[in-house]
Length: 313
Image (cartoon, rainbow, N blue to C red):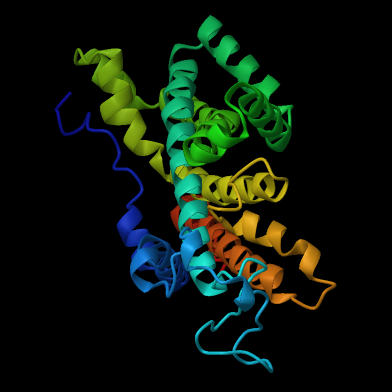
């Protein structure tokens, strides 16, 4: 057998697949705008919402500029602390996306190796990983996170928990949802390891590590990319829910969930914008990420291509 004949099939061309689907490109651009707004929040925000000395209680609950009493000084109005809502949303977007992305990195770092190990070795390793994943999936991610954060609050205290809220949320959410990556990676390895190119690589003397790393992993990246996109949306939603319940970011470091919670009691007092505007931004962000995951699935799945499937956008 020649080296060329033994070469593994090329992985799904992610770049060319994306270029062929305008819906994916549009969603990527929109997501990039969200990311840029959060990343450059200190440069574009009119006010630093973390600087309590710059807040004026006399400016509290001012309406957005398009309502009577609004001002261009605070285009989206202010909250109960007199904090510029536009600045708070930009900083909150930064935290929410940071938690979502880093949590998915942890999920992938744990789930992909475990799933590939289970799928490639089989036997007892497969049984152990699969059982742990099934047990964790049977429990609600939000419930696990609430219990973990309550324990952290007991051990560290509320002040220490607030100071380290971002890394703690990243770890808690990341550890709660690794089974999605593990099950996807396991299914991909089980499908790929029976193919001829794996047998050829083994016959040529490739080690198990080389086969998994150089041949199997590139061929299962497409579904893992889709899981990552959906996982970011789930992690952002989990952070928002935990912050809304008072177990996530402290009020002095606003995330989108914290902003929604802080304005919840003001809805019936007429200051609806304190909750509605951050809520609308959160919904738009989640829709963008979820639609991007669906569109990537349609673009990268060869079975959908063969049936003439179109991008969901």
